[in-house]
Image (tube, rainbow, N blue to C red):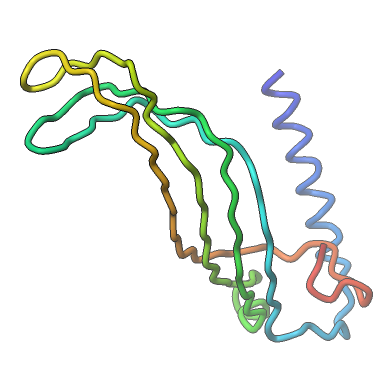
Length: 145
């Protein structure tokens, strides 16, 4: 099964590269290609340690939670002729609420503890450096597909 999937991915890449090779030389590429996107999903936090007031409880199970966020980014296409790729940067913000339910009995540095439930809110801010290989470049799609 893995070999079949790998073969399909390889064939799709080859089709994309052949489209890139056939790209017309007179295609006008925008020097800057910006975007904004939103997304949603579900977070499955792993067991974690919780520390409060000198007490450390281990292997606390946090609730699974919906997550959502957005990205804003920009591609610089000036590197395409020299390196064959576009280079970009993006900012990412993701939010989720992995609450700690009450009633768990946890090991800690002072023996067994039962923490009260905690409402947690997590926000992730990330910055990314990106690279993309333009494929399917045509006059209708100057930055590729």
